[in-house]
Image (cartoon, rainbow, N blue to C red; front, top):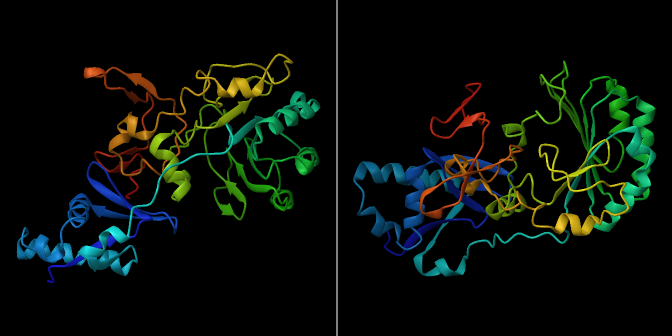
Length: 342
């Protein structure tokens, strides 16, 4: 083995260590790969050592396994061989994250009241300069009513719309017609007897019709890309930059939170001051790295989680959080609650 030859992952292929195994996040290709924790230590060692030097620290049998894994990573186009002197020519990717506006996504609970005064809602959306909207419809809605409501946003700054239907009452043909709306990104139908994906239409079987009880800390909501990975380093990717308006116009950080910060129909409500307050942004800066046991989970930088973190007492003034509800995945046993492997 040449003493000046080493191996490096591409800058957008980032290893994340879990309790029992690690994952390499391929941020450019929106995918991920499981690897043993020991391999992550090898990759770290190769940041300063050549393959030839590091080989001397392993037995022949151990190094053969290491070599097979490195070849595996090269074959997957996750990394490459290079001279150790060229390491500084390939810096790590900058994971700094920011967003130009204070709110990046708004959740709107549909109601006849909100529909009647939708102009007020749109005026406040314009003030926030928010382009992403999620509409949650808990009660039964007819096809024509939903189409008319979506048409209201045709001349707004909203660029993408997601719809969540809590009643599976629209036909497949009606849903397909709605999905042709250029702003519509996806329609999720909950409590459905159907369970499949079809383009923008997602049917999901779930046993609840309450929007506050639906857990999204599931594999279906895993997201692997540069933006999500970067945001998750310092922020809670679910609560960060989010605003929720319920059926009565009350303003919350999200549907899961209980503190209300004003009402959209109240002339005294200054929407920009409201969402800029420390109280409103309380949950934004609680990333998975500050929540136990998420901080030892290999999925922590791809997981969207709507559970509310609570402050946990720790010695020496260390600030950590926890959830009262258990996750479907246990990073210590590497098991899902439905016993689905990997």
